[in-house]
Length: 163
Length: 155
Image 1 (spheres, rainbow over the protein chains, first blue to last red):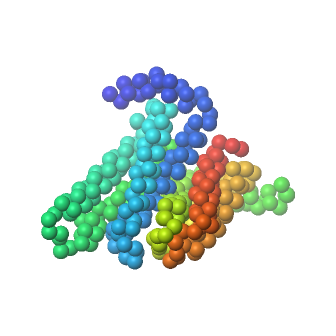
Image 2: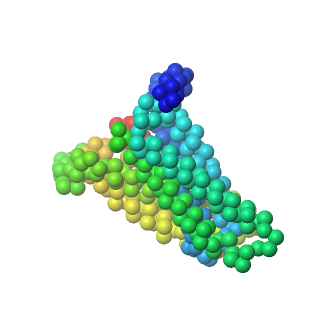
Image 3: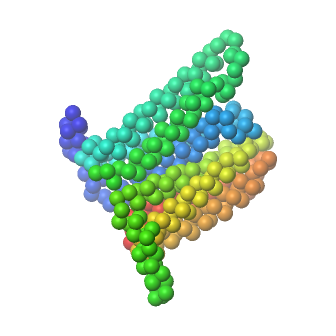
């Protein structure tokens, strides 16, 4: 299946365009790094606060930063897909790339779980005696978010070295 | 380039650390990875500071993100250490690289502006000058990221 996908990507105009224009790859890399900084910077603020650090800042004051995480993630999904289109034979067989994708899926499931906890908390007629951000499950999910995204950075950097 | 500088650069490359980073299997990737984590921390948090200023309306108090600045400084230290190791591994070619020189200037500017922004935003609302500074912080850091990427592409 991966071979079919690789062959299809190699036959697309996107592949030809990326391969034949020298400026595209460094531009994609630059955008990928900008996305990474937006994603990681905002997650540091939100996740560390949810873990229990920097208690002087109210939780509701930092929720707006999740928007930057989404923006950074979208930039990186678009540039990341274009990276794969530009060199599919290199990426699909690369162990670091495969593990990076796994970590991204786990990170998405993790944030979905956090979101579900939040929705469940809001839906309750009688709020729990334990505040949402004081729950162990919330702190654990926030800590795992930082672990997963740091792993994504590490594995992304290792892609050219494990070929 | 003066002979003294050339000799110093070759001396750095021939040092034990320079040799290890340049020739070992894992030396370069390890420092490159640390450099990326440091960058994401320092630049990421600096961008959030700037966004905090730009997105807060004139009459509202700013969220006091200064408490996160120590973490940004940790990112800076990580970048200084890993960046020095990466530089030592290819000092003679890196010294001549224009994107590298521009990147260093932009990092210095970005740092000074970010520190100034953090200091001026403690317990205050966002004024016109702070907004201008925040905009400059975003532009400078984004240009530094681009310059860093171009090191591999422009001699």
